[in-house]
Length: 103
Image 1 (tube, rainbow, N blue to C red):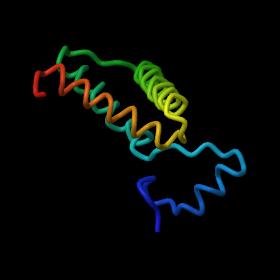
Image 2 (cartoon, one colour; image 1 turned 135 degrees about the vertical axis):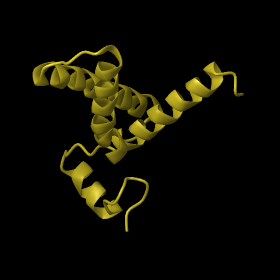
Image 3 (cartoon, helix red, strand yellow; image 1 turned 90 degrees about the vertical axis):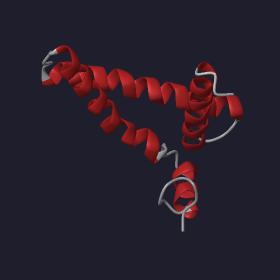
Image 4 (cartoon, rainbow, N blue to C red; image 1 turned 120 degrees about the vertical axis):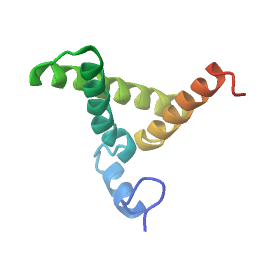
């Protein structure tokens, strides 16, 4: 079946790329749910209630940032958007580990 690109078989991913279809990493796409949970926790912590439009605007900003970071990593390392998302995530975790003094 597929590789680290979630449950999409390699042959399908190759077909996407050959036909100009953007294929992104499932973890990056699923980050939207995690982001909304984080926004909800922020609202609860300070007693705010944002409108649906405000939450959607904040989510769009987060998702655009994830895409830009993934695309930049893909360009820098000469790879696909999906691999770029994995690289960007790995680098972000690494930076956090270093910032905490764990290494």
